[in-house]
Image (cartoon, rainbow, N blue to C red; front, top):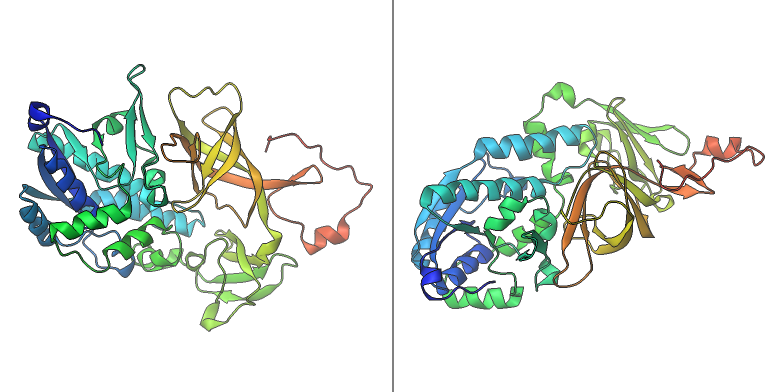
Length: 411
């Protein structure tokens, strides 16, 4: 974190997003310790009480206000319920019913930062801050802002912040950029502030994709029953019906331990490999047969300085808590990109999944781009496929039949 001295610090007011947790509290404390004028803002964003939303819902405003009083900083609260509903809950519901993936953490961080910037104008703040583990760097020569991996690589949160604009990054301060989690906990302990016991566990759960079972109750609350129809669970290999189910929203790709209608337990060796929402079919197979080496992305956003005229070797993170994997990017028209993984990836890559790209794999690595998965697949004997052969295809395969010519990365 950039240290400000003397009058420079005293002239600045920073609005800190507070959720009643350890990280945001320590962030506010460190800024105040620098001599900055710090104001705390508690953001309430949902009026309903759901277990699945508990990891997102801030502690009560009264609790946040109490923490701000202990830190001796002003406190404000704001409600963005309608914004959270339209940009997080509605997409979660619609994508789930369409058998696609959606990463709520991306959308949530975006509206949180937008809200902080808006409220900063009201309180006269010159900048904003949060307790996220990330770092902002400004290239003094080009004036371009970049998002960097923090010192605490194990708790890196740049994945969820990767859609922030240049304007948003220019106003952001991450006080925890150079501090590891054990040091943060030590500082919090010295402050003598009592935090909820489930705070750290909630942070871990929040990093996981909420496309899975956590949001079934939300989908059922915010969608019409007519959109959640009964259907069949089918075998991919031979197309036979295994059992019936109560709605495709109950399932996600790569899911194991599948249960059908009336608690019917599907063979444990089978996983969900495809969902057809139009036909209400959930298709299962042995997941060990599935892999992919390529992904085609849409809505690709990138570093302003990136050269799109040639392929780029870099690293990709496929989920908020995932590793950074070596890959190569091939740039197409209309913000489309093809990703070629260095190593074969197991399972099925869901449409709508969010990928973030980095220039390297270490402290200080820079976020250079991100995009949404449109499709994925692999090459089998020079033929590009999304799924392995069915039993019928195996039976009908004619070795004398001309194979499709491999057109590298054109799919």
